[in-house]
Length: 128
Image 1 (cartoon, rainbow, N blue to C red):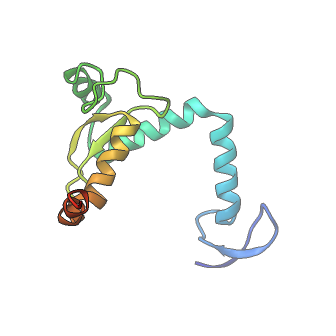
Image 2: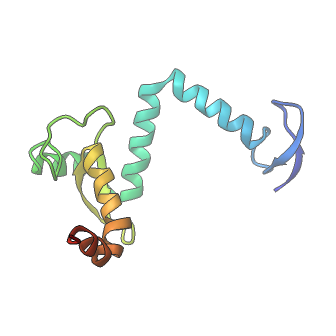
Protein backbone atom coordinates (compact mmCIF):
# COMPACT_ATOMS: atom_id res chain seq x y z
CA UNK A 1 0.00 0.00 0.00
CA UNK A 2 1.12 3.49 -0.69
CA UNK A 3 0.43 6.76 1.12
CA UNK A 4 -2.69 8.42 -0.23
CA UNK A 5 -4.99 11.20 0.89
CA UNK A 6 -7.96 9.92 2.91
CA UNK A 7 -11.13 11.79 1.99
CA UNK A 8 -12.66 11.00 5.40
CA UNK A 9 -10.00 12.10 7.92
CA UNK A 10 -7.96 14.33 5.60
CA UNK A 11 -4.61 12.67 6.32
CA UNK A 12 -2.05 10.95 4.15
CA UNK A 13 -2.26 7.30 5.17
CA UNK A 14 -1.44 3.92 3.70
CA UNK A 15 -4.40 2.73 1.68
CA UNK A 16 -5.16 0.83 -1.49
CA UNK A 17 -6.27 2.64 -4.59
CA UNK A 18 -9.53 0.71 -4.39
CA UNK A 19 -10.98 2.87 -1.61
CA UNK A 20 -11.05 6.64 -1.21
CA UNK A 21 -10.68 6.39 2.56
CA UNK A 22 -8.03 4.84 4.80
CA UNK A 23 -8.52 1.42 6.45
CA UNK A 24 -9.13 2.99 9.88
CA UNK A 25 -11.93 5.22 8.57
CA UNK A 26 -13.38 2.35 6.53
CA UNK A 27 -13.42 0.08 9.61
CA UNK A 28 -15.09 2.83 11.65
CA UNK A 29 -17.76 3.26 8.93
CA UNK A 30 -18.35 -0.50 8.70
CA UNK A 31 -18.63 -0.83 12.50
CA UNK A 32 -21.12 2.06 12.64
CA UNK A 33 -23.17 0.44 9.86
CA UNK A 34 -23.14 -2.92 11.68
CA UNK A 35 -24.36 -1.27 14.91
CA UNK A 36 -27.11 0.59 13.03
CA UNK A 37 -28.16 -2.49 10.99
CA UNK A 38 -27.67 -5.55 13.24
CA UNK A 39 -30.16 -7.84 11.44
CA UNK A 40 -28.77 -7.02 8.01
CA UNK A 41 -25.19 -7.46 9.29
CA UNK A 42 -26.05 -10.91 10.72
CA UNK A 43 -27.68 -11.92 7.43
CA UNK A 44 -24.61 -10.75 5.51
CA UNK A 45 -22.31 -12.71 7.87
CA UNK A 46 -24.48 -15.81 7.47
CA UNK A 47 -24.40 -15.59 3.66
CA UNK A 48 -20.61 -15.19 3.77
CA UNK A 49 -20.19 -18.18 6.10
CA UNK A 50 -22.43 -20.40 3.99
CA UNK A 51 -20.50 -19.40 0.88
CA UNK A 52 -17.19 -20.14 2.66
CA UNK A 53 -18.39 -23.63 3.57
CA UNK A 54 -20.01 -24.30 0.18
CA UNK A 55 -23.49 -24.66 1.69
CA UNK A 56 -26.82 -23.34 0.50
CA UNK A 57 -29.27 -22.10 3.13
CA UNK A 58 -31.37 -25.20 2.37
CA UNK A 59 -28.41 -27.53 2.99
CA UNK A 60 -27.66 -25.77 6.28
CA UNK A 61 -31.30 -26.12 7.36
CA UNK A 62 -31.32 -29.80 6.35
CA UNK A 63 -28.17 -30.43 8.44
CA UNK A 64 -29.71 -28.61 11.40
CA UNK A 65 -32.96 -30.59 10.96
CA UNK A 66 -30.97 -33.86 10.92
CA UNK A 67 -29.58 -32.89 14.37
CA UNK A 68 -33.08 -32.31 15.73
CA UNK A 69 -32.65 -28.50 15.44
CA UNK A 70 -30.31 -28.56 18.43
CA UNK A 71 -26.57 -28.42 19.09
CA UNK A 72 -24.77 -31.39 17.57
CA UNK A 73 -22.92 -32.03 20.87
CA UNK A 74 -24.91 -30.92 23.93
CA UNK A 75 -28.34 -31.09 22.24
CA UNK A 76 -29.29 -27.64 23.59
CA UNK A 77 -32.21 -26.23 21.55
CA UNK A 78 -31.26 -22.57 22.05
CA UNK A 79 -27.88 -21.15 21.07
CA UNK A 80 -27.28 -19.25 24.37
CA UNK A 81 -27.25 -15.74 22.89
CA UNK A 82 -24.42 -16.08 20.37
CA UNK A 83 -26.32 -17.74 17.54
CA UNK A 84 -25.61 -21.09 15.94
CA UNK A 85 -22.10 -21.89 14.70
CA UNK A 86 -21.35 -23.94 11.60
CA UNK A 87 -18.61 -26.25 12.86
CA UNK A 88 -16.01 -27.25 10.29
CA UNK A 89 -12.59 -28.82 10.04
CA UNK A 90 -10.06 -26.01 9.70
CA UNK A 91 -7.74 -28.03 7.48
CA UNK A 92 -10.34 -29.37 5.02
CA UNK A 93 -13.15 -26.79 5.56
CA UNK A 94 -15.57 -29.76 5.65
CA UNK A 95 -18.69 -28.99 7.68
CA UNK A 96 -19.22 -31.34 10.64
CA UNK A 97 -22.41 -29.93 12.16
CA UNK A 98 -24.17 -27.04 13.83
CA UNK A 99 -23.09 -26.17 17.37
CA UNK A 100 -24.03 -23.78 20.15
CA UNK A 101 -21.44 -21.17 21.10
CA UNK A 102 -20.12 -23.04 24.15
CA UNK A 103 -19.58 -26.32 22.27
CA UNK A 104 -17.99 -24.50 19.34
CA UNK A 105 -15.48 -22.87 21.71
CA UNK A 106 -14.84 -26.24 23.40
CA UNK A 107 -14.17 -28.00 20.08
CA UNK A 108 -11.71 -25.24 19.11
CA UNK A 109 -9.87 -25.55 22.42
CA UNK A 110 -9.83 -29.34 22.11
CA UNK A 111 -8.29 -29.23 18.64
CA UNK A 112 -5.84 -26.40 19.40
CA UNK A 113 -4.76 -27.18 22.96
CA UNK A 114 -5.83 -30.58 24.26
CA UNK A 115 -5.04 -32.90 21.34
CA UNK A 116 -1.47 -31.64 20.82
CA UNK A 117 -0.84 -31.90 24.57
CA UNK A 118 -2.89 -34.99 25.36
CA UNK A 119 -0.06 -36.93 27.03
CA UNK A 120 0.95 -33.93 29.14
CA UNK A 121 -2.69 -33.35 30.11
CA UNK A 122 -3.16 -37.03 31.06
CA UNK A 123 0.03 -36.98 33.13
CA UNK A 124 -1.08 -33.81 34.87
CA UNK A 125 -4.53 -35.16 35.71
CA UNK A 126 -3.19 -38.46 37.07
CA UNK A 127 -0.58 -36.91 39.38
CA UNK A 128 -1.07 -37.62 43.08
